[in-house]
Length: 201
Length: 319
Image 1 (cartoon, helix red, strand yellow):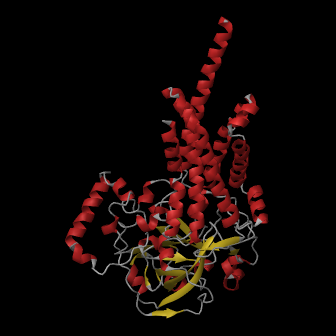
Image 2: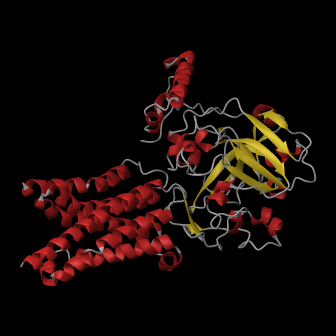
Image 3: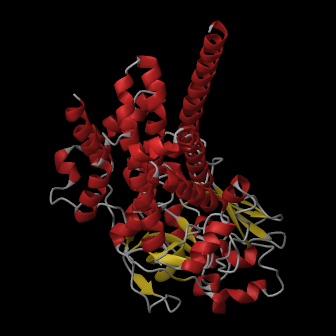
């Protein structure tokens, strides 16, 4: 089954990317295409981060262990859209204007947190292979739990950008908090179970 | 494609006027019943509803105050890329969701410190005056800009006919409040109605325009039909749209974006590349239709005509 689902999921994850390309060729990216692409790729980075976070709770709820196999790919897609988002900002919007970019990072809080989130995604991507996971052992878990911090920063980045109508960032924040609390609750139960196991042993 | 080409068949051949009007009435009633809000938001009703006939304006004089050395922004860009939160917060919302808005007939309430207050029909206000084409740069606080050939009347000519008295230190403008026709007003993205204001000398400056059209045609709903303010040396949000109240006041009036985020948006809102903004560097801007950013000019390049009004002011403090 996995042989079938993985390529399917891979293709589905590329649909947003394809739609930008298509809309670009059909001249459908509004009167300000750079802004459109920046926002669009930013949105999808956060969506993929949230999907990544939802896989473990979903596995716990459905008890479908196999779901975890797709987590890495979805996470890598979050990095893929994050890269597109960053490159659009860096190479297209600012056109490699390093002093302007530095000023943005230092002086504009929403860019400070967004940039931080992007940088923090890089080590997770590098250590995403099975080999690295095996080599890092327990450290790998700790390192990769920073995805919660990164997603939080990403949503804060969006919230601080919006001028007045914060309903969408707040909706994303609600989903994020829900997923985070599910995870924490699960972690607590697991701790308890472990504790009981030790006592009975 | 977002851009709609005008069809050869006139809308009246497809739908009779009475059918059209009764449909409008039905829709309005259904909105009141809370039924079709989603249908409108999703654009289902738009093809028929948004058939806005852009009427040509006649007898327009060219103005020496126009900015003539820059390429005009395309009509389609000007009319599909708008910030007009009354119709929604996305740039395409105003062009896609303004179909129910009725800019005709239109009256304006003139109030406050003047000798001729009252309710005026828009036609009565504009008829005695010569329409002018004024090509201005328009700089949005979001760091993008356009060059727009407005059609309008100098605001000073309009305001003088109400004979403001010596107490009139400021002019306050209000956008119409019609949540039935303006879906954005049914959410709380800003406090409604939208309000703006100018100091009286700013309102009377020769550059300040009461616009009724652009590209030689009447304003479309998304551009602030039927009448709006244009103050080209200030950020775009100062140029309040669909005005139905003008009040002469003694004290500095409240302004919508200042109420929403006082640290970011001041009363004056003069274009100023030196003043830092927490969201956008104001040093540069992207002209719509261009790739590379260009430097933003103090007072949006209109310093010769307006800088003298602010000589003794600290423009970083009074931003």
